[in-house]
Image (cartoon, rainbow over all chains, first blue to last red; front, side, top):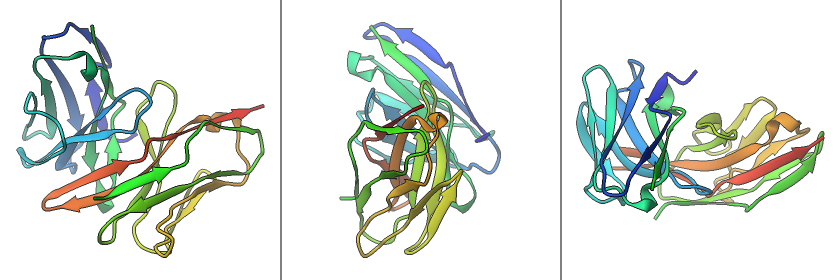
Length: 111
Length: 114
C-alpha cells in the first residue's frame, strides 16, 4: 500500500481533446510529481508540485499542466492531445526518507 | 547530466537460478539509488533503496549495493521464482534546486520459467 490512488485507471480520448487525470495522496506526501511512461520505456518526469506550486518541470510542453490541492490531491491536465501522448501516467508522492511512492497509474490511449 | 544505464532484456531464467541485473549511473553529488519493479499491467512498486555509498538495500530476497567507486547498483537474487517475472527499473534521485525527481533506466524484463 503506497498511499497514492489514481483515477481513472483506463481511458480513451480522441486526438485534439483534453484530459484530466486525478491523484489522491495520503497526508505527509507534501510533494507530488507526475511521470509519463510510454510503452517499453522507463518513466519520464513531467513536473513536481510542492505546497500547491509547481517547482520543477521536465522536458514537456506547456499543454501539460497540473494542480495540487490543500488536501494533497492533484490533477494532471493535458490539452490538445496527440497520438504520442498515449502512455501510462503515474502520480507519485514523497514519503519519509525522501522515498517516492507511485500509484497504480492511469492508462491513456489517444486515437 | 544525470543518467541511468541498465542491461537490456529480456533476461530469461529457470526457477531457482541466480539473478543479476546490471545498473550503472552518472550523477553529480550523492544521489540515492532505487530499484522499482513493475508487474504486468500495474504501476511501479519500490523494491529496495540505498542512500549512500556502501549501503546495501534488500527486500524479498533481492539485494543491491551502492558502489560509488564503480558507479553501480546491480540487482541480485540468489534463487528466482516464477512470481518474480516483471520489469525491473533502476533509478536515481536527482536534486536540482527545489526539485527532487527520479531518473529511470529503460527497464529490464525478467522472465522466469518453471
